Image 1: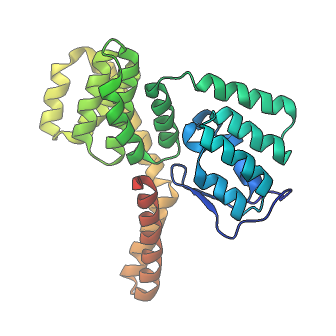
Image 2: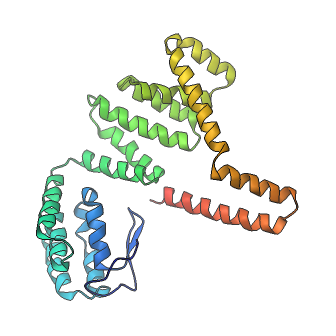
Image 3: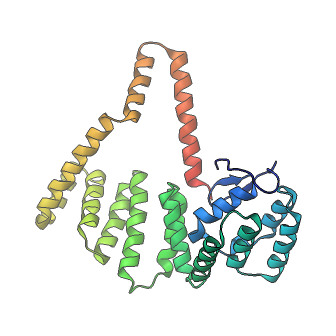
Length: 277
């Protein structure tokens, strides 16, 4: 996280690592900022001995840690735990603390499905698609069969993740499941596009003939594909690939190797971030 003004306690030598968010915290202020920014994702896992120990040993806030230690032993709510940290640090005014307390108390009444759906949506928005996919797969088993819109959204998001991994056949199947449950035009376009990528030209032609009522939708998808192709031609990534090709052709082997390795390092870092459990 970006550094913030240190107002209370020590700057930690050893950060508190939050695996779910892939974030390292170095001060009590950063912890407060994390809580505030992700208040809708906080649950009882926040109330932990590990966090209290970090506050005690790394931040040097013994009195606060003593108070929170009691909370952990008594299994108090996340609302009381977080509110106490906010109050002792003085980071936020009383009205803000009351608002956070209210939000956390309301969230405590959410079902497990609703809580995990929020987590999956957060991971999806952060680009950590494989982690989101793992949660979506579990959620499908628990969402009631009568909740068509909820199941359709899960299938749609799962399909989008497969499409990002170029697994277009799986994506098409899931888009179709979503479309059957909630037949809107956006899902139909996604289903057509996934089939366009997954099928041979002959098979795609047959697919179009099997769905004559979708002629306008097929045209829209072709327009979208043309726009994407142009966007790629104008993209920074395409320029980078072209530059690498030119370096190789011109015999600038060492520079080609350096830039290729730098690119591979970044791609591996991105992949690790997406797949970490």
